[in-house]
Amino acid sequence: MFATALIVFRESLEAALFIGIVAAATRGLAGRSRWLAAGVGAGALGAIVLAMLAQHLSAWLDGVGQDVVNIGVLSLAAVLPRPLLPRPRLLNMRTIPITAC
Image 1: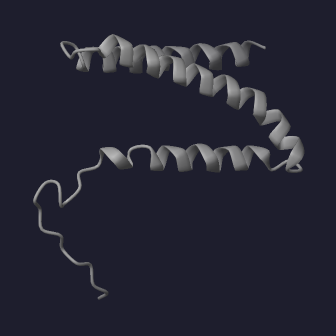
Image 2: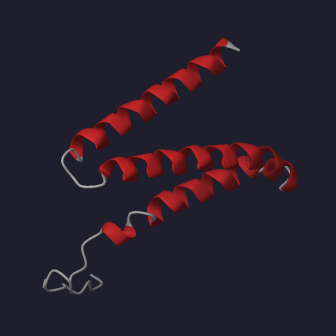
């Protein structure tokens, strides 16, 4: 029980630190409070949905549900920053073709 409480405390502290860093970095931007609140709300909602579905998913997939959840979360983390990456055409940059050696 103590180990679970310690993990929850550590993750909550990490989330508070991350929110504080984002809040400090966006100070002075218009509408930042609304975006921060939306991000915190979306994160909390996502955590609740994941917690509710994790046990059912594990049962449906014969014990490999945790692996499927990990694949889904890591895939989502890999895809979400994609719209934020610079595009060569938009930045008027020249693309360098990749050739096999």
